[in-house]
Amino acid sequence: MTAPKSTPKSTPKSTPKIAPTRHAEPIVVPVALAERAYDIVIGRGLIGSLGARIKTLRPGAKVAIVTDETVAKHHLAACEAALKSAGIESSAIVVPPGEGSKDFTTFATVCEAIIAARIERGDIVVALGGGVIGDLAGFAAASARRGLDFVQVPTSLLAQVDSSVGGKTGINSRHGKNLVGAFHQPILVIADTALLDTLPKREFRAGYAEVAKYGLLGDAAFFTWLEANWQEVFAGAPAREHAIAVCCRGKAAIVARDERETGERALLNLGHTFGHALEAGAGFSQRLLHGEAVALGTALAFEFSARKGLIGADVAARARAHLAAAGLPTHLKDVPGGVPGIDALMDLIAQDKKVKRGKLTFILVRGIGQAFIENDVDPAQVRAFLAGQLSG
Ligand code: NAD
Ligand code: GLY
Image (cartoon, rainbow, N blue to C red; front, side, top):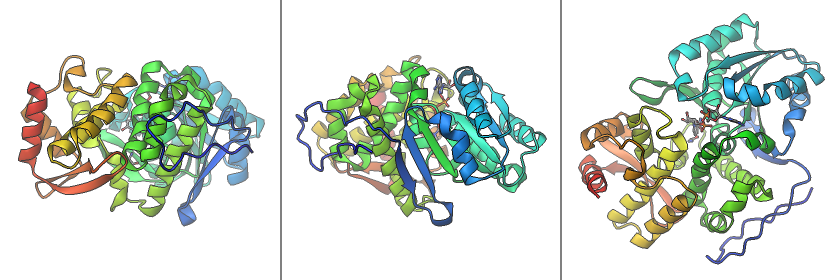
């Protein structure tokens, strides 16, 4: 195996555009969770190995593939063929694409279909899709027959770097995002980077917000590398696999230390308190994709940190400039159709899971790569900040 060039510990801003060398073998990132440990396997063309890998982990298991109509059109046949070639019987459960499928109705449909397909304990649910499918199928796997094993085959950039790893599964409530769910770890994640070739550019870009997030929250050298190499990551060069692996290693390390988000895992929510409110405000629609909301929320989290005197305005400007260079929204005015007014935004923020006894929890920063959890944010301060952003 050809080792990637590791991300330098302290890279100057003028890092030359050097992509890591092509990986001849898949990159394997272990998630060290004792009896729930699993591997994230990253590389081009891996879907063909899905059946053999499942057969090794669970000999004799049947499979229900949960996917959406769009992903099914592009990749279901390859998934089914890979299972068939390993002698694995499978059935497919196909739901409509989009955030709307993370609802109670679709959840019930998927659970009923898994049971109807006679997927028993010892069998496998495969989540073939983006974060919506991973969250929905994972929660169905956690619930049907009181818990089935599942395998994540993430097909969006966002899912490959974030949602397929760590075991958060769930659906939305009419009160807000991800409010009903379970922690349920997959037994394997197969991130086939070739599947991203069919992902629309806008969706890729939205997923890139979560890539930048890992640098911004805890890895300044990776953020500097991204500033120099983000176009190669978009182009699909080996830089893409390297970036996905860095993100997965970062997330796997945090999840191994804090699986249930009693502490440091909350750092992964950088940009999400503002972001979830804006996403809900846009009706979870195509007006503002999840990753776009995270980009905007991250720019606001940096700006808010600057307003609180934690960082200089130049640091907030640097974070915003990178997200904007990648084509992501970073100002409230960038949201097509506008954002809700201040009262509605504050209500949405209060509905978020990050509120305790009237105080808000925000992930703030003391610099690039230096995020921390602030549990005691005064809602009045947030209100004044957002009012300023709305009028500016
Ligand atoms: P998504 O699953 O809706 O996928 C985006 C769109 O791209 C969909 O229309 C889908 O059909 C399409 N698509 C996916 N892969 C494709 C491919 N290879 N080719 C062509 N089209 C493809 O959304 P997403 O951005 O992947 O994920 C967002 C969701 O993930 C949100 O619901 C968010 O809450 C969740 N999320 C969960 C976690 C977690 O830890 N569980 C973390 C981050 C985000
Ligand atoms: N995406 C946040 C988490 O997995 O904790």
